[in-house]
Image 1 (cartoon, rainbow, N blue to C red):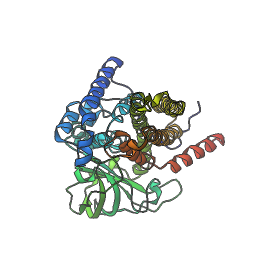
Image 2 (cartoon, one colour; image 1 turned 180 degrees about the vertical axis):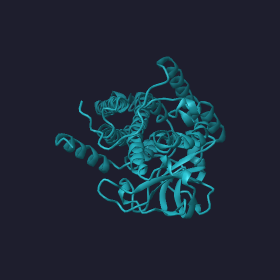
Image 3 (cartoon, one colour; image 1 turned 30 degrees about the vertical axis):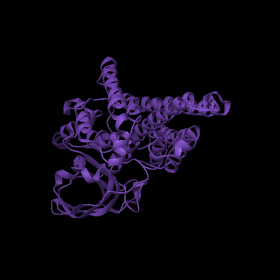
Image 4 (cartoon, rainbow, N blue to C red; image 1 turned 90 degrees about the vertical axis):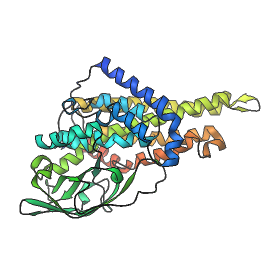
Length: 399
C-alpha cells in the first residue's frame, strides 16, 4: 500500500508487551470496567465526577500510562494494542477514560514523540503514575479542528518565552497539573506554520482556569476555558527545544488520537448493541418478546453490522499506524466512520427501547448523548473528510 502520511512524522511504535501479557492486561481492564465501573455509571453521571476509589483503581491498573514507555513507568502498549484496550474502556461511562486518556494520548504523545530527554525525564513518569494530569491546550475560540488558525502568541523576552491567549473546551483543565500549550511564534508561511508547543504548569503565574463547562453529555469528564496572560516560561518549556516542532507534534498526536477515539466509539456502540439485544430478548409486546418482531431484528442486524465494520476498520488503521504505512488517511477514515457509526447505533438503540430509551437513567439514553461529542473533538467529521479526500488526491498526484 502506498504511503499517504504526508508531513506526519514522529517516533515509530514497537510493541514491548507480548501477547500473553497483553491479554492479562486486557482481561483485568475488562473486569474493572464490567464489574466496578458499569454498576456505578449513574453515580458518576449524578455527581458529574469520578469517585476517588475508582480513580485509585485506575492508577493501580497502570491506566494513566498504558500507552507511555515502560522506561517511564508506563505499560508500553503500541497503538494496535491501545485500540483493543480502548474498546473495553469505551464500553462504559466515557468520563472514566477521559480522566487518563490525555496522559496517554494527545498530551503524553507530544512528549513521547517530540520532547527532549530532560522533558521526558521530568514529566513522563509522573504522567504514567497519575501524579500529574495533563491537558492538551490547542482549541481556541477561533481555531478548533484546524490549528492553522491559532491566535495564542508566544514572544521571546530575553531567554524566556511569554505566552498570552485563550483556550477553549480543554479536557481535564479544572484538574490539570500540566498544560501542553500550542502558541504562534511567527506568522504562517508556506511550509512553516509558525506554531510551537510549550509545557505550562497549571500553577504558573498568569494561568487562569474558567468554570466547568455544562455539556450535553459525558458528565464527569470536565472541560473548561483556559486563559494565559503574560505567562513567563524558561527556555526548557519549549517542547523539543525548537520552535518548528509544534505543528508536527499537534498533527501527529491528533492523528494517533483519532484512531484511539474511533476504538472508543466502537466500545460505546457495542454497549448500545448489547443493551438493545438484552432488551429485545426480554421485553414483551402482547406477550411476545419484541426481539421476535422482524423490524426489531432488522435494527439489531444493522447495529451488529456497523459494530463489526467499525472494529475491523479501527484495528486495520492501528496496524497501518504501527507499520508506518499510513499515518494520515487511515486515522481520519477510522475516526470518521466509527464516530458516525456510533451515532447511528445509539439512535437505533433508543428506537429499540421505545419510550423507555428516552428516559434518564437508562444506559442507551446516556450513550445517545455521550457519543455525539465523538464526532466533534479531535477533528470534526467534516475535517476528517477533507483529510481523507485531500490525501487521496495528493497521493494520486505523487505529492
